[in-house]
Image 1 (tube, rainbow, N blue to C red):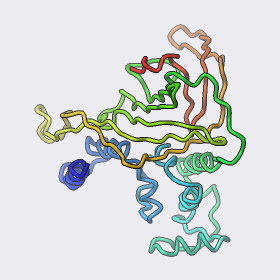
Image 2: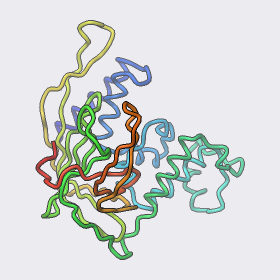
Image 3: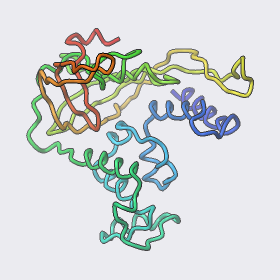
Image 4: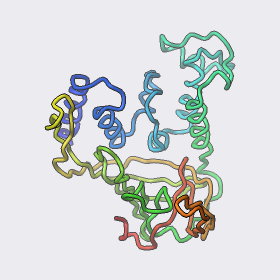
Length: 283
């Protein structure tokens, strides 16, 4: 495991040498690294507000407790110089040189992206493991965050009868570094708790594109496994669950509405649709 993190560290040191262009091959690789180790939100909480410009995934939020989510949400206001009425928030943000309290920040002062992130964080703050458990029936099978197959599979949860669980990352990514996460799951209150014991990932070799020598590309090398002595817990709020949900979707090629019926669940900020009753039909 030490070799894995040494490799990731060395790769991260090399990134600035190749490209500083937004949405470059290096940016895609950095995003893929965060899928492997989702810690962008944790770094922001430690004061690196520049990372607000990066995408914060549901896994970034799911690894935080509700207290940290509150700090993250209010950090968006703090970076705009908000004056807080809560002394604990004022004291926390005062640890950072960038915090310059100047006014009461309104939602109208924020960008659309910031407002959307606030709503996503608030959703995760609704997690309550003390309340009565949400009853999830017929969970065994493959659940995808899109109701049809496109060029490949999208992000998928796979639930087994014995409470084992997997998360399979979408095929439709430029650099699919993280492949799968394996562990177990349980439901407490309105929370689905995913306990990850291992991550399957591809290692990549950086090399220059043979056609354009100024472009860097990454070539898949080996399939590897990271095993955790203590499982990593990701906690997703369960918002809605419905068996045999029926809805209509416009088929723009025929200009007609097509009816779909699938089991449906909202985990975090995404909707998942049951694609198969058989968890072995995951690929």
